[in-house]
Image (cartoon, rainbow, N blue to C red):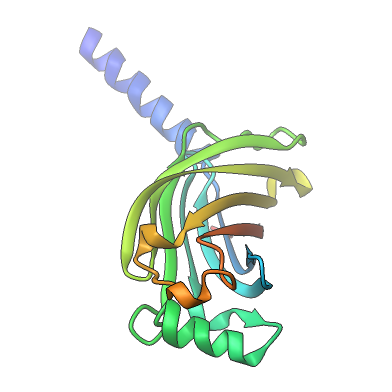
Length: 185
């Protein structure tokens, strides 16, 4: 009898958790990066980040095509794609991970979360811990996610020629702004 009650309780808990789980997606996340160096600053922006997020466990899968980044100067974009990130060989940057806590869909206040997962760029995968702010909007039908973190070029085998050390920073600041919509079931 005890085992039957335990089984019924487990089924109830699992089904109520599944009922609360919502899946969200975006196909237009803004990803930007900034390199500040003595000679010049370099900024690039993509509005083509794609992601899916599960609110119950905070798992997220995110990717952006390297060729989708736009630069102020065409030559910068060409060098970025051909010489540094080798976009033909490594077309995407990805992050797959999950939050250390569940997203509170009933809260209208910005929530601070930590995403733990694998960040891959230039064919090199690294375990990363990323700070994010999640804001629930429109009674849980939308989520806003913002993150700011640094990426060291050497961690991903992105080589910067010594002659250009004054033009390109060794550590790049990355910003993510994503508006997620609920995926209808």
